Each structure stands twice: as C-alpha cells, then as structure tokens.
Amino acid sequence: MELPSPNALRTFEVTGRHESFRDAAEELNVSVGSVSRYIQLLETHLGLKLFERHTRGVSLSPAGRTYHESVTRSFNQIRVVTERLQQRTKSGARHIVWSLPTLGAHWLAPRMNRIKSAVHDFELHLSLDVTSADIAYRDIDFAVVPDYFAPRGSDKFRVVRLYLESFTPVCCPRRAGIDAPLELPQQIFEHPLLVYRHVSVQWNDWIHRAGIGNIDQANCMTVDSGMTAYHAATEGYGIALGERMKVADALRRGTLIAPFETVVDSGHFVCLCWRQHPSLDRMAEKLITILKREVRDTLGPGVDPNSTNWPRWIEA
Image (cartoon, rainbow, N blue to C red; front, side, top):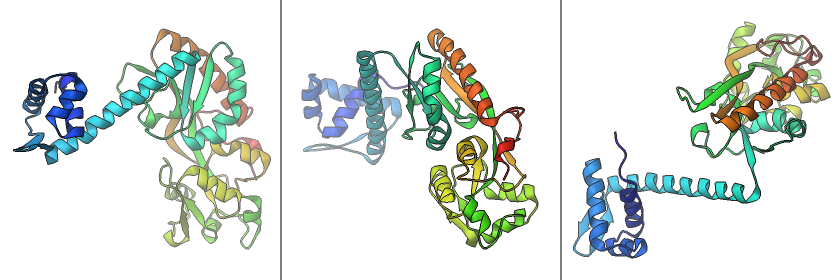
C-alpha cells in the first residue's frame, strides 16, 4: 500500500493535536481551506473518517484517534533521531554500538576500552538502552546481538556470527555448599531456580537435556531480566541459567560457579550487525577481527565459539 502524502500526515498530526482546523492552519501558516483539503485527501487515501464534524468544530473519530497516536509517535521518533544526528555532527563522528543490557554490561562493556584502543581511528560509543529492539529503526551504526534481533530479508544490513549461545546452571559457591550440595543435576530442585522470560533458552530446555524430569513451578523465582538473575545468583538467592559469555568473567573471578557438565545451546548466534555503507563496512572489518579475538580470549585455548563447549577454567 502506498504511503500517504507527508504533507497530509503533518497536517493531520497538527490538526489532531489541536482538534481545530483553524488552529492547525495558524500553526502551519496555511489557509483553513488548505488544511481541510489535506485532511480530505488523507481520509480518501485511508478510506476512513478521521474527524467528526460538529457545528462548533471537529474532534478525532475513534479511528482517527488511534491513527493520530501512531502518526505522532512516528513524528516524535523522527524528531529524536534528527536531534541525535545533529548533535553527533556537532560533536564529531561518533559511532554507536548497541547491545542488549545483560550482554552489554557483563561481556561487552568490560572490553570496550581494549576495543576502542584497537580501533583508535574512529570513536565508539556503547549504548545499552532498550527503547526499541528493532535494529532497522534505531539510531545506531553497529549492534552486537543474538541473531533473532538482526534484520531479516534486508539488503541494507550485514550480519557476521561471533559465537553460539550456550547455557548451563550457575550459582555462587556458598549456594552450592550449603544445605544440599550440588553434586548431581537433579539436586537443582532443592534450590530456588531463577527464571526470566526474555531469553532464548528456558529451564525446561536444560532439565530435559539433563534428563531429570520436569520443573516445579513452586520452586521458581521469576525476575525481570538476565542481569537481575545473575545478580541474585551471585548473592546466593538461587540458581540462574547462565549463558557462557555473559557469566564468563564472574566464573573466572569465582563469584559464580558452573557445577554441571550438561549444557544446552539456543541454536542462535550472537552476531555483529551493521548498516551497509562503504565507511561502515571498513570499520566492521576491524570490529569483526577484534570481537572474534575477544571471544577467543574469553573462552580460552581450544574452545570453538561455534560449539557448546565451555572453557576448562569454568569447571567447578
């Protein structure tokens, strides 16, 4: 379906905000007749009545109000991105790398200084905000995300795999040593299991792989994110299902341990994604090399990033 005229959409946004043709005409510095024509043009295009006409003026129809919310949101997004681009132009070229909060905070952020030093000819800024997970509409240059966040079927983006997501239970050493020591996989049922929904692998996936029955929902503690789950596990409140790259530093420090050999992969890869452009393509070549090196250094010698293997030093 062909998009409506930008001028008609702009006129509709202003008219809907004022619910007045006259006030809209004054803001847009056009005639009331011009406003009316643009609204009629948009209504004809959509096949909808966007305004209810009254003797004393107009008001948005139910359909018009729903459409106005979407149009306003779109204009606001364009305005925000425009302001960001202008600010970036004023402050010099700065390239934004976006990642999800848990992956970004636990793996990418601690390595950003080394990454920046290795690509000193261009400036990188790490963003972990979650205003939108749709990369195609974000004001970013690069993204380090699981492949299910990568734009599909678009020739405007390129995607390179970095490593396979791999999961196993993790907890603090104190949790593994009190009341019911964790020696066998089925002993996880004697401890609180930390559950968070927005993850590609859930507890049942690991439990079925381990062949130990079914999860007991009464023994689960639901939290809002992976970051919360890992923090709670570190503090001894329960057992989290840890992704090897996100928990690697905590495992190396000994604040978390991985007691069992059973691992399960999500079937998804964490990737570097970027918009296709000659200048970004050149930067991406450097980032790919550096990020793959960081992945190898995190996993240690002999561990294939495309396998489910965990580093030897992670063993409890």
